[in-house]
Length: 327
Ligand code: SAM
Image (tube, rainbow, N blue to C red; front, side, top):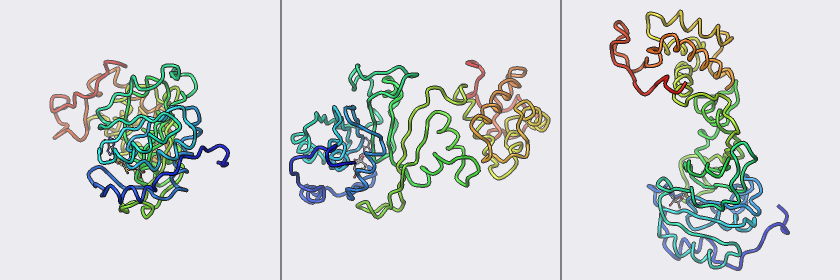
């Protein structure tokens, strides 16, 4: 980014000095690892896309190193949510010198409702373009309430291996249940990795920066519990032919026959491996599964792992979490 597009903050003590001054020893239980490298910090913010004139919510600002970079990119407003009150002095110092409004909220993001937090003028319909709102955090978190404003983009860090699995395309070693689940609802972009040594204290893992943009419509637009069950079952034998996992959707006496019928209806070659299947192909498997279960709804309750024996099925344990109600 050229210097002219970045605003300068008034001189502030360095983050390193603030950490020393306020004796901010990192707390492991709050996943505290501070990123000190300015080049990597600004790369995280750039990964979000342009935040100019946008509202940005940063979760877990810590001493405010990423916050400084966000401010420099000229958002209309910054909202920060931090659980650890020890960061109050350094964040207040930043709020006082920030040329853009910076609001501090101390609390746990997991208990936080973002429903009223952003400007109503920035609200977009879900099918519209993404709103001028970004969520950024050097830690993974979940704030469903933000979706009231439309398809709010999130730029988050994960353990590198998790980031790789989230974004993995078909045919790769990292392709997994997590890849299909994430890619069904979001465009997943694994932007870059940060070596563990860039953090203080150094974590045992490297970190991946991921941008998640919710899709207008999920690729598989079916009830969550069914999608989750089908993907989990198919990946239960990741290296085997996919028919092996599909079989686990059905009780033993009918397993082979129905798995074969299901894959024929879904137009999937039974010898395909789970990591070779696209999200749309998983969608066809879900649809074929639903259509078999419409004939015999008890199959939807079948739980391969929860079964002691299939002999008397369906009169043994059933997993009631699955249901055909909202099909
Ligand atoms: N943003 C700083 C950086 O990149 O150097 C600090 C990142 S540190 C990995 C994670 C931060 O999130 C810490 O400041 C921690 O206190 C905060 N945090 C952890 N869990 C949180 C939660 N549930 N709600 C809000 N903040 C949280």
